[in-house]
Amino acid sequence: MTGAVLFAAFAFFAFAQAAVARNSGQSAADASALAAAQQARADLVRVLGQRVADGEDWRDLLENPQITGAPDLSDAAALAGRNGAHLRGPVTVGSVRGLPAFTAKIEMNSSIGRTVIPGVGAEHAKSSATAVIAPRCEAEQAEEDDFEVSCAGSLFQLSGRDFDPAELPDDSKLFSVYLSD
Image 1: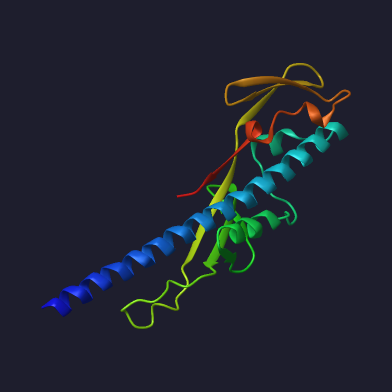
Image 2 (image 1 turned 90 degrees about the vertical axis):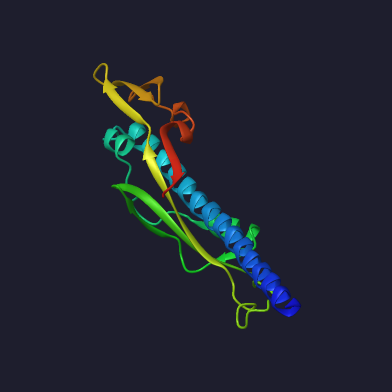
């Protein structure tokens, strides 16, 4: 009887170890996906500023962001490493409900550890997360080259004449980044 109780206790402990490893892995995946999306958001804002400065069409990019080219996703790998994990392949760029999305798949660097359940101790927790970039703004033309931009309740003026990209609000005011369900 005592042996069965001890075995059950160790088995519950093994499941708890696995749950802790899984939660740590999910945190690493979340951080990596968010980092990738935030880097891509910064790239979007740079492109947006350049389009305004060059007199090119920019409203569609502001209201319907799309990723063109390969964004720099180095922060995703760095955050996985800081969370005791590594990326399992590259961060993938996709779409969630028509919005740009970044999926990071990670594997924890350390194993679950010694357990009473055979074959489990050498396993490494694996997890994935997807982060999405969503627009927060709408632009209304006020005059020929002047626009009034509303971003989540905040208003600012944007003029194509003598535009300085530093006039744009913070990246997070233009586009939100969130984890997908």
